[in-house]
Amino acid sequence: MDRAGALAGLNRRLLESFSRRTTDALRAILPLRLALPRIEPFLALNVAKEVRKDAIVIRRAAQALARTAPPDAALARQILEEVRAIDREFLGATARFPVRIEIPYARIDPLRLRRIGRGLDLAYRILESWRDGRRLREALAREELERRLRELLELYAEETQALSHSVQLPGLLAALRERLARGLQRVMNEAALQLARETAHAVHRQRPAASGWRDSRR
Image 1 (cartoon, one colour):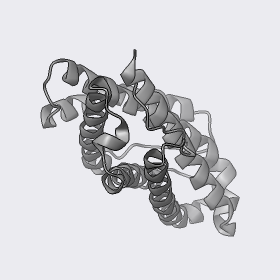
Image 2 (image 1 turned 180 degrees about the vertical axis):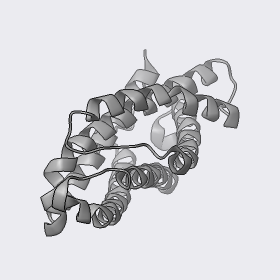
Image 3 (image 1 turned 45 degrees about the vertical axis):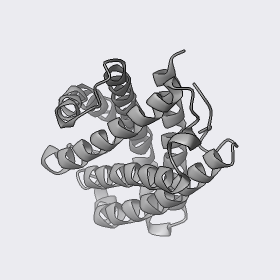
């Protein structure tokens, strides 16, 4: 059974739920609602980009598990360089939008490296428990699972907020950029807290979370 593929699918549903909650929250903020039609396609492409990157992290964690070699900082740095190709595709896809985006690597890379490292560690632990026939709730206490998911989502929020500073909005909407960046991180952090809590509770109730996570052997 492709446990890494199953975990990547669960992660995709988690990030997609996170993105939907963020967009819904932004719609409730009137000034930011004006800019939303311009940035919503960017947010959709951004989450798709991060889903692909996380899938690489999970696959590399599975490879490390097969070698019985827990992932280390060197592997995280290797993945950081590997996913630059996905960034280039992302920039190419956003070229058709009425916004201009530059990726501030000096600011984003330290955040990404932390998220990759935490993602590798969590994926390795989950895949190891599934390989050994244990359920997720047996591998991670509810509080620890909630904390780990929240940390990953909040790091994603920090990356997105840093990236949003580089988004050049057209015309009068340019004045909203800083407000948008601040509002984006606030609503993403709120969504991260709520989603991590709901997911961890759902896993330990043996019921599906809204994000699609299940506490099951793979």
